[in-house]
Length: 381
Image (cartoon, rainbow, N blue to C red; front, side, top):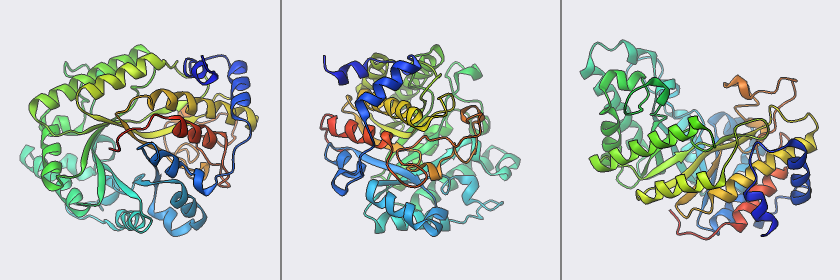
């Protein structure tokens, strides 16, 4: 068995010393991000799309970072600028698409694919939606949201997270759906409504169900995998248009749940058996419990990227890898935007992404580059 094969069978929760040593031995110093060794080109050579998040603010204020994005990424995702609460200015129909338009324009000018994120998400719903008087008014608002958004970017967006995070087994429903605003307003049929309208509005865009906490080897993740597969099977049987599954993959380098190559491969094979493709949509690796020393931290983060991608990319149905940010300069974890459990407690800035805050490649960049280079070639999706 090759050294790479040994790494594939390691677990994310392995001993810190062994992981640090393995990472240091296998990765060495970070490579210069040569033009012919960009993540964009390495991924494309294997039939993959590699992308990252971006914001209109970054386009306007950080030209050095934007240059890095143009070199490294073949796909752009609006991190927040397409979310309903961010587009809507406080009343039904009072929408400002200017920031999303800026990102769409940037992607087009840079020869990048645009990914739509997202149509409906319980967590970023305008406050006025909750005060609408009846079901009919709420259904009209959902329909208007989907059709207006998808129509505006028709023919431009590669794939849409039509509904973001629709499941929550802990809520106790037999169907595993999340007890939140859209389910409460319209019942389970809100999913069919949203996906059918998206398909009718842009027949060529790929429609995605995007979910979190389905990657690791824990009972909770296994329950979520089963519930997600059940939902996808119901959608397929009902004729609800869905083309792909988004796997968020917010991972932890040290002290997190264990990882099983076999379980991930089996889960991905089950998705592929439904005739669906797979997109890794929000990949990053946090270091909240790693030692302070940067070299050790970066090695552990890189090793996690490598082992996850080595396993994930073995599945030909995986067509896309998106990191939730490209540089530590612009990371939701570094900004302390949410999810406090993933923040470092020693006050040091986290280092979860392939490039550091000065836009230099880290061992995580080399790990990703090698994972793409070593991945089986697939039919582009």
